[in-house]
Amino acid sequence: MNRLIAAILAVGLAPAALAQEAAAPASSAPAESSEVDTAALKGQVDALAEQLAEMKTDVSGLKKLKFSGYVQPRFGWLEAAKYEKGAPQRDGFYVRRGRFKAVYDTDLAQYVIQLDATPSGVGLKEAYASFKLPFLKGFAIDAGLQLMPFGYDVGIRSSSDLDLLERAMFAGHFLKGEYDLGVALRGAYGPVNFKVGVFNGNGVDGAAGKDNDQRKDVIGRLGVDLGMITGGVSGWYGKTIDYTSATNETYDRVRLGADLQLYLDLLPVGGTALKGEYVWGKTAIGTGAGGAGDSLGLIGYGWDVILTQNVGPWNQVAVRYDTFNPNVKLDRNLAANQGKVFITDEVSAALHTILSSNLKLSVAYYHPMNREKGDTAPSDPKKDSFVAQLQAKF
Image (cartoon, rainbow, N blue to C red; front, side, top):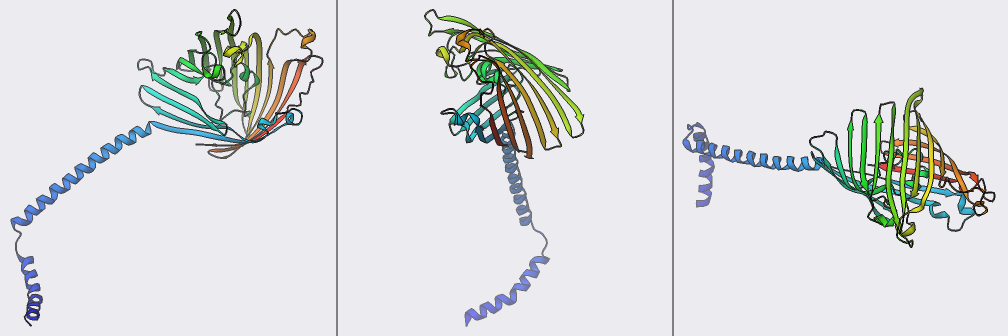
């Protein structure tokens, strides 16, 4: 009974108490409570500002790091597979390249590393550090594993953007492996650009990527970019020692090159480009003679001409004529050389279709021919090939 009376009194008195509280003037207690809330709010804002400052620092660091890469799955057909045992190494499905590249770029330094991952294994393609010279804008020093600064086909053109999917025959002979260890100075001033350095000279395909001797090679390219016309001249001078020979024979390893690219708007369907490159050299890169190289002391040359035509915004047609002579001093009349090939030509064509901003479909056909040969060498080597490639980039 007492509990019931107390509950009734509480309900009856509650509205009066609330009305009295609302009518009462503000006292110092609520003011003190308001000051406490403001201080707490200020502390929360300050803490949030500190967190945002830390996040800004982290984001600023991440903006300096960039990732890129591409993968090139292919289907290949080789005519030689019908005639030669072991020939179908790239007949069927395979992955030509699987690249992943990381670049960290700051005001004075740049870090670059690139990997190539395919079913045959994972290999290092690039790993170098750059120091941007603060007193010479646009100049930098690159040290480590990097592209050979020679020619257009190797020194300038990316493997993800080759007109005929593969480089010319002379590149696989004189510039095999495409990358080498060394230190180089690069820079640009107006339309002129250059890169020159000191390298091992063996490339990544000679002596398992290591230098077989203490000799070093000087490699460089001087280029010009006039917009519609670009080009350059390249040079390479060095020596290699054959320690497998009884007298440790020394051979010159030299190259000279010139390249020119002309970009025109001849047809209403799209842009036209005409490109050409010539390379003369002595001693090829290879694993022969304990890593000293292949074709030691032999002089050869090669050149190519490429015509590309854009057809609308999504398609491009490319045609190349490629010539290679590995030994200009080979005696064509010698009986022992009658079965050898003196000069090889190749006609190739490709069609590229851009499916999206990061996806491209390409098909290419290659037809090699023996232009100058010994009596017993066939003019048609039966080594035609066809490639279909889908390339995805990020």
